Length: 391
Image 1 (spheres, rainbow, N blue to C red):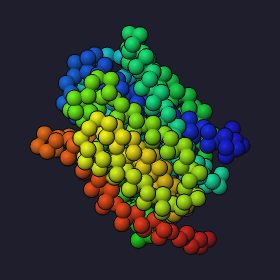
Image 2: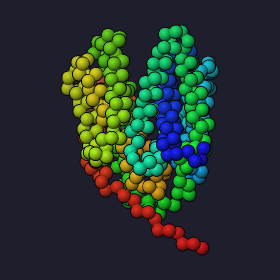
Image 3: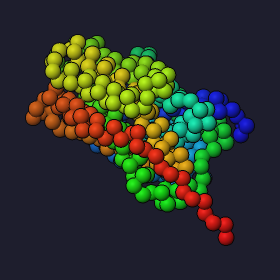
Image 4: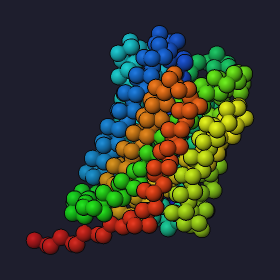
């Protein structure tokens, strides 16, 4: 297994992305079933999801520490085992305190996998010598769509939400077992690189790429959390309400399938600026034209930009800090949770005083503020530290 080709490893890492997307989508689409089974209110579930986000941020730190000591492949495999156990735990009724603990445990695994997948993706991309990150992220999106369909079918057949959750749990464990020794070997004993060159160059990489991630997840969280609510506010009939989110996910998937071919041709800076502009344009359309058709179109346009921006930012971080890519990516990944929280919480807080339509200006403002930061992508280089003297 250690002699596995880079192409085979890339496919295995893609399976890791699929396991993450399958599990997360199974959880969020099972929320109504969780409420009924556990007797939970919307407010309580919102608080749990917020705590899950905090737990995922802690998981990203865990990934950094495990990768620095043993290598990112063990962080990824271990995180998949935690995800599998957490998902399995959600399939049965438990006391509320235990249910919350299970979801927080799952959140830690989710964050660990989230960070270590990007570490692994950058490593295998460097080994292959060509861009593959967007297609790896496409595996996540495709699996998330599949999970939503599986959940829908399971509920239609009165099988309950436990079936898709169990499928996702088993898949995560299987990928973890397959990848325990076969994922890309992570760079170990790398901590001195960040500290010795950690200076301004590393901070610039983390800040610039982190802000791209922050803004992408600000848009993603705003659309994912509030698109259906906004369409419902526009008096959309039941079958139209989920179409905004569906259109968004479809364009995210399409953009990720083609971005690996476009980035080398157009250049990373042009693609980053274009992706930001497209994301902002999509949200601006929602604000400017308060109709159902414009909203669905705007969400779809925003998905084109977000689909490109996330893998592009992680690739830029990994290539700029090649000798410390695992550690730098773990820190960049933390910006993900800030953007996700802001998109979900701030838009919700403003929905009563100003309305969701105007609240969608928040991701537009985020995009505008990030554009000048993105222009620094071409300045991201971290010199390798001088070899340590042999004692």
